[in-house]
Image (tube, rainbow, N blue to C red):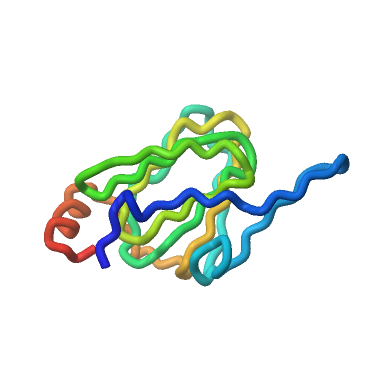
Length: 140
């Protein structure tokens, strides 16, 4: 099943607010539309720096800006769509097979990411030309 930028979804997460502070959560197979096999976070990114510039062949991911803000630009080889994440109660679902770049990080930002697979270096596509070739051949 070939995914496009139209398959990317921004989910509003549950939010509980009281005078002591706010609480939000995300559960696998509920707000996160897959079983979580790995969780990681990106932090200490210098303001304005860029990360990403890759696609996954078989990994779905779910990204939350726990603190600060950053942009996630999704590219399906034909179209691009940019999402600004700046609230800790929104999660961005990015299905496998889509190129993504994270940039425009604010100082002190923290990105929390959930993945549908365990870490596998072979799952990464980091050459955009090769990515486009596989897309054009209908392989991802």
